[in-house]
Amino acid sequence: MLQIYPRMCMTAELLLLMSFWVPAYSNTVVSGDVGEDVILPCTVEYKEEFSYNTLNILWKTEHIHVYSFFYGNFQEEHQDEIFKGRAQLFHAEFPKGNVSLLLRNIQTSDAGIYTCSVFISKYTHKRITELVVRDRSHAYTSESSEVKVSVVVIMVCLIIGFIAFLRRRKRSRDLLERSQVNSKHEETHLQDRPRYALIINPKTLKADNYTLWRCFYLS
Image (tube, rainbow, N blue to C red; front, side, top):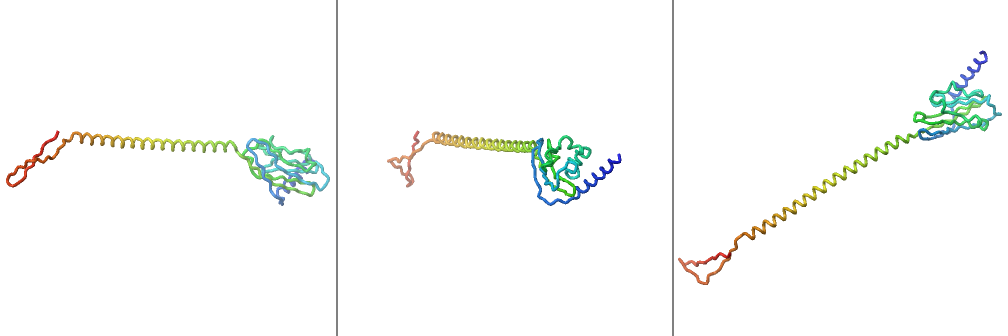
């Protein structure tokens, strides 16, 4: 029991030191689709001889512990529930300086900033990686909705155009029929109208100094 307390204190000090260490490096962006496995890169160069017992690694996002490896062992008790069974480091790659994190079956809630902190003796290394998670199903749903809306708009426009065409066609037919009816009516009127002709009688009749003309009806 007495040996456990010093180690707990050292772990607390190590976590505190890693939490307030200020990094100076460029960030990395890793992207993936929902349900995929991604690797968040983190490499370190050892300035001293490598030893698992002196290697301490902490992966976290905001204030959530993703994976921690202290004093040669994986600290499962510090790992958050949402990452249990999904976060993994490659222990065999530690001597090569590869402390990258494998994150399985990523979800939209996993998106964010991840910090890799490596502490060896007096040296500390930090690297920040941004994880971007794409939700393809949501994108497909949005695209499908847009396509459906476009199809509906096109159908409405076609229907309106077809109705306008039918109305214009009916109007043209009505005008044509009306014109034909008027033409027939005029022709009938001309045929039914009596014809008159003025015939000058070679014989003029004088009455009261006026010339009389005789008009004959021509059938």
